[in-house]
Image 1 (cartoon, rainbow, N blue to C red):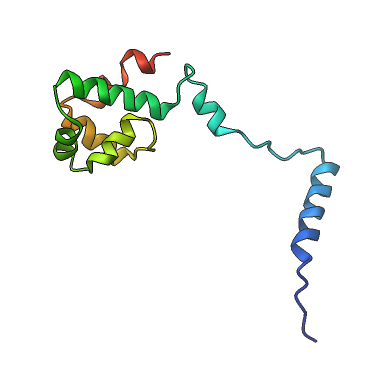
Image 2 (image 1 turned 90 degrees about the vertical axis):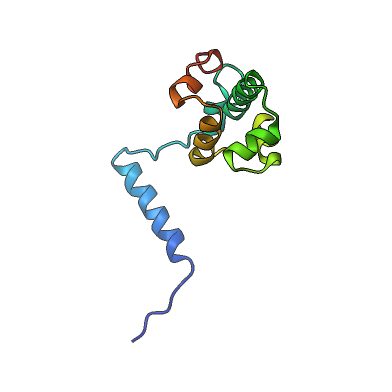
Length: 116
C-alpha cells in the first residue's frame, strides 16, 4: 500500500505543535523588529552614521569621492551611496574604505556619531 502525500500534512503538523506548546504552556518566541531596533540608535540609521563618518574623514583628508573610491578599489557611485546612507556596507568594503582613510576600525567607531 502506498502513501499518498496530502498537502495539508504540514498544516496539521504545525497545528499539532501549537497544540502541544499550549498544553505545556510554552509560547513561541515573538518576532523582533530588527529594523526598528537598529534605527533607534540616536534617531539616525546606522547606515547614515557610517556614511556621515566616511564623508567627514574624506573631507578632512581633502579627498574627492572618486579619489576615495580609487584608493579603496570600489566604484565612485558606491561611495556616493554609502555617504548618503543608501547602502548596506559589507565589512570587507568598510575595511577597504577605512584603510583608504588611513585610520583603524577603533578610531572610526569612537567618534561622537556612534556614542549616542
